[in-house]
Amino acid sequence: MESRYRYGVLGAGAVSASLIGRLPSKAREVGPVSAVSYRVASRIANTLRAGYPVRTADELGEVHAVLFHSPPEHLETLLGLLERAQIDWTGKALVFCDCFPDHAVTQRLQAKGASTAVAREIGIPGRLVVEGNDDAGLRAARRLARALRMKTVEISPDSADLFEAAVTLGSAAITPLVDRAAALLREAGIGDPEAARIASSLFEQTARDYAHSGKQSWVWYARKPPELEARIAAVGPRLAGVLRQLLLFGFETFGKHRESGREITQGRVEEDQRG
Image 1 (cartoon, one colour):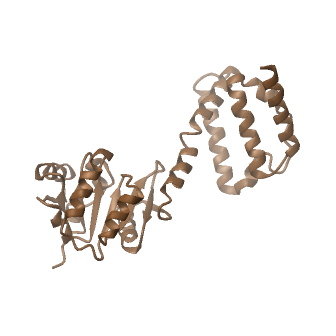
Image 2 (tube, helix red, strand yellow):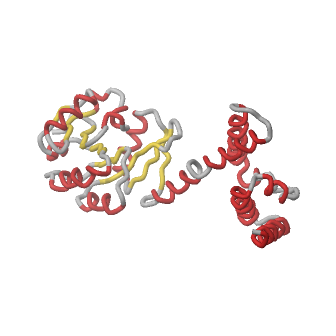
Image 3 (cartoon, one colour):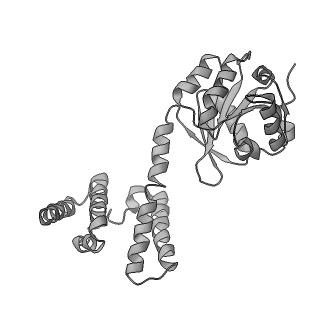
């Protein structure tokens, strides 16, 4: 007999703070809730204000999609419960929500017949990154996104590391650059918080221009750069090498201004000789 519930939940940790906890109309959507013990399952169901606790993971077999959330330290324990459960995974989906199973983990469940997907946020409002191995898992993840009123950003299977590298490059890796730009503006006489606002605006405008025009938005794409050594020297010895390398990276990436690149490289050689 087909379950009247859309989702089952297997979880540990702060399940209510995950995507699962944000599902609207949870009481009608979530059915069996499983965990390492009936007591923990009861606590999760209570914090979700949805679903009902079950004593074994076997009972997750009555729904078409299982939503999984776990902190890293409990991941293997919950996976063991799921692998031992008497569940016919044919046509069923397992969606990892806001957690990061590696390829070996998803393969283990796929070997049982589960259609797996991973759904997680990336810090961009309204966007949900989805990675899946086939249609059933992807359909469940897309349905989850629609329920949350979010748009999916779908990536190829097993490309999570590439995606996370791009996110790191576009977030944590550039925050120190924003901070250094703000510091230089303060040294130029601009007070806080105006220096921070201007620095942020420069990076935001650059990103907007790139979204509109791609590589042609690069400020020197169609014109020769000015003399750059004075600017490099002005940032101080600690930042000079970083700025020089970033400028060279730009010339190499876009295949332009070899002469400027040679001048900067020569400046670095002379700087090293002086040092």
